[in-house]
Amino acid sequence: MGDKLILRDLVKQFGAVTAVDHINLSIAPGKLFSFLGPSGCGKTTTLRMIAGLETPDGGEIVVDGAVLSDKKHVTLPEKRNMGMMFQSYAVWPHMTVFDNVAYGLKLKKINRSDMQKKVNETLDLVGLSQYAERFPTQLSGGQQQRVALARALANEPAILLLDEPLCNLDAKLRENMRFEIRNLQQRLGITAVYVTHSQDEALAVSDEIVIMRDGKILQQGAPESIYANPNSSFVADFIGLINQLDAQVVSVEQSKTLVKLGNGQTLIAAKDDKQWKVGDHCKLLIRPENLMIDAWDQSKTYNSLDAQVERVSFTGSIVNYFLLFDGLDVSYRMQATPPVRFAQGQRMTCKFTPESCILTRD
Image (cartoon, rainbow, N blue to C red; front, side, top):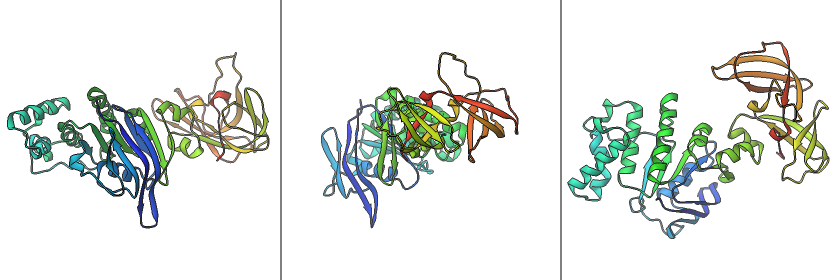
């Protein structure tokens, strides 16, 4: 089982720029947390401080009760019992696969028989046993990334750090590798921190997702929770496709909130935990997959919006309809399953439930 990782009031500054701004986080043993956010949000800087490659300007990094970093003291990376995978494969081209994986074990001066056994076990774990004597240049990109993963795992780290490890792979390899990494992390019970700018990766591999912007944590939670209940339009937009409609609160009732759009139409949103008042301006958010052509359950209440189809995009398992709602001058997206039922220029009526409507203040 991996170790518990705690970040306490962590700060990192580069000149006048605060890259990491007083963040607090507790990662339970054996869990995988993903840091997700745009470039420059502080996610990689946070990872580098966890690894010991950067010194905090404030706060602490604590692993199983031991302070590894604060503004006065930084435990060296090699003393932290952590493994790290980088964006680039960072494998040594002049070494065989076996020697790449054995590198950290040699530094620890492990005896040869134990080292050989451990390297062979790790290569078998990542499916590279048959490539032990090959050089990295003789491997595909996905295989080289597995070598990097094997090297990170060979030392039996308590914490695994992954810095956008799949960004150099093509789409299909990237998808396969994300599931392999998640499977290995769960099988081995390693605490892991995964930095990515890809919402798909974060949703696929994480126990929890941490969304960052401007050095701050905006929201933290399970993938399903953040996807279904984003606390801002920024989070909603970053964690998936979202339609945003400007609205104003016109009524707040026991189980629902009524809002009016710019075209004068009133829609119903299910009651949430925000304290809305009549007259408040808000954004009504709805996922493209929650817009429906047909309202199948006649026992439910549905909102509806009339629209003209601006264009259609078929991508195999999904049909994307880009729509112009009556009286609104912004294009919105609906996602439906095939077959294609509407063509460009045709009119349709979108249905969606109050429960699928998210109201935010920004």
